[in-house]
Image 1 (cartoon, rainbow, N blue to C red):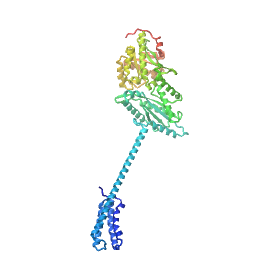
Image 2 (cartoon, rainbow, N blue to C red; image 1 turned 90 degrees about the vertical axis):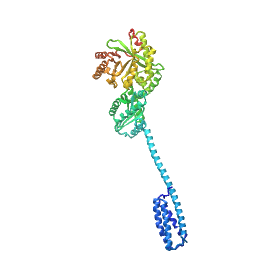
Image 3 (tube, rainbow, N blue to C red; image 1 turned 135 degrees about the horizontal axis):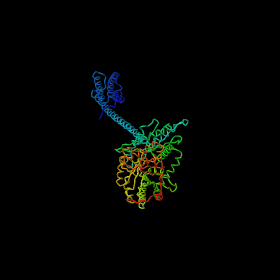
Image 4 (cartoon, one colour; image 1 turned 45 degrees about the vertical axis):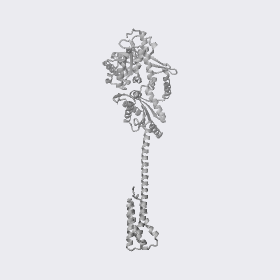
Length: 571
């Protein structure tokens, strides 16, 4: 047990005060004795005070011994003294000593209580510090995305509102809101797994923030969407920023030895012309984003007033799309493909058409992207494969010649594990020999995950079907990848065909694609041939096959039958 005094002077003076008791009890003592009594208290009080500061009963004991000694000396020196003998002196001082010990224990107890109070204060201090740290963590979770470390939607909306509130209406100032959405990200996430998706999102976030301007805020809204706020900007500056985002995100990503490609679509709205509140600006930027996706993705689009009505139409289309298959509103049309050298119809391409019961015919560029986004393209695409195989087998049975039917495979379909089973089932149910089925995948699908794509193409080819790479020239494939793809046909995108007679660069691209394909022993098909001049140019460059309105528009099966020549089929 600690017997030390707590080091407080007012407690240390308590012990010498006990020595005044003889004066009180013997008030009739001679003046000389009283003087000597007071004199002998001075060193005792000094020692007690000193040791009291340092703490401990040792100081108190020394002071008592000193007092007893002075009492004894005074007595032997003949000072008038009222005590009868030294025994009473010892008894008296012993009582004082016991009182001093009691005081020591009391002060020791007070010290312990004081230490407990200090400990409690320390615990409270540490608790306050932890509370502040937890508050910071809670704030970070409330305002920041845990995956990318970027601010979240809540933070973005607060910052946007603050900027809007701070704008001086007398000053001509423009603010831009961008929504950046990754094309085909859901397909990568669903097929390769969430780990791949998370790693890809982190890399995309890094690319977005690496070129962050001084007056810009980037946040992750959730999923594969990012918000960007450009303060005090112009339409031209915003356009340049959007073009830079398209360029930076489109480079390949290496994730766990997989080379992945994604492209962004961007919707843009401006304050004050497109809205004066954060909700309006975000809503209109989202409308512009949807338009960018409708127009083919991998592009940016500014909001225009006519998009407001299109949003309600989009909701109506999505609702109808979910019931269209059951209500048998879909039809398959067929567009012939021609051998340029002989003029023969050698194949047809199956093209999906939708006749909405209330809205009428819906253009494919309006409902196909919506079907992709909602995932409905998978059951719809499987239905198209089965219908195309049955129709082509029917034509062959009726003697319409050895036509190949070409079917487009969407990104979601291609990356589905069940695709091989669907193809096998469609061929088995229809009885169509596999060499008369041509599966077309776009270049952008092929470049989503090159290694996985090559593996899937080899699996499909093992079934005996033919394979085409569609829309070539619009994506990011290189010759090194092209020679690795186990394909039979290379299709030139119609955007190059339509302008090749007016644009020397498009003409040069078409020539190059044809030469590359011929050198790789691939068949070349040109899409979008609309004039005899188109056909003549392609024939001179060595293109083997063509399709387009010059030969026939897409037709229902019963109308196409009227134009198909009947030929025997060798199986």
